[in-house]
Length: 366
Image (cartoon, rainbow, N blue to C red; front, side, top):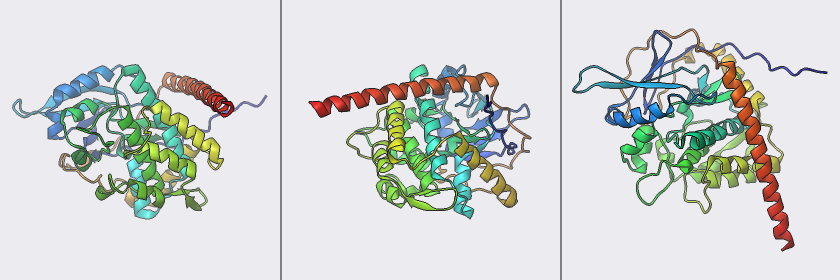
């Protein structure tokens, strides 16, 4: 009997401070990550406390652990910050910056596995806590050395909704792409799925969306995107994946995905139909290892990335604090929980696929 073993994870990368529209993140002396939120989100402190308090006991390997909301400074104008556990790995935003700066290759199989990792996690968040993320983006997804993605900053959705900003300002101030709606943007499950669609589009483009890309150029960008392989070859986006984008992206669509599970089922169907793809944890491990090697060859790039565009809502950067040696690894129990959830998801996908096939066969005989 041959025993299958998981290859050892690569050496961890050092912790680096990071700043985007949701705030400036630094590492405290006790190893906790502190996110200083911008003033407008600080004024929604009650909503932040409500959502993060609701998620404080939510423990899963696909999510960073949120701890609490704290304040410091004067009572008249306190600074608000969020405490959470740091996540070992590299943000997808950092990978995109390496792609822009030096042609770092993000292959299609890794990009598709990001979606396969994120959608089940969002489905779990939606179903178990009845809340949405509201701000999915490459800035807020971390690729861990083990070849899995971890979602961070999932406690901001309610505060963002309370701002009552129009779709254009959410994009300009926070780089949050929202689907079209009759009134104010809806922070619902469709919005989370649409934001995931934008993430995978950015990975296939090899760059973050520019301010003027959203929302009117999204369909054009699907034409410009390429499915790159690790050997450097590239091809146009397949017809099946184009059809998935048409339902996933935050555009006017006839049948947009309403839930993360619906988007996941359609993605698996597209992958099987084309027979071009081989996504999996190995693809993400390979992506992480290539980035670690690339970083070793480009040491000047470490910590020298551009900040996300549209930082009007962000805080001013301060001198970077000392880097941590490493962030804690996910406990074994959480990894076992993730494996169990993946098995359950696979069973659900198989059942839904069988039901869809049976329905198609019945329709063909009608």
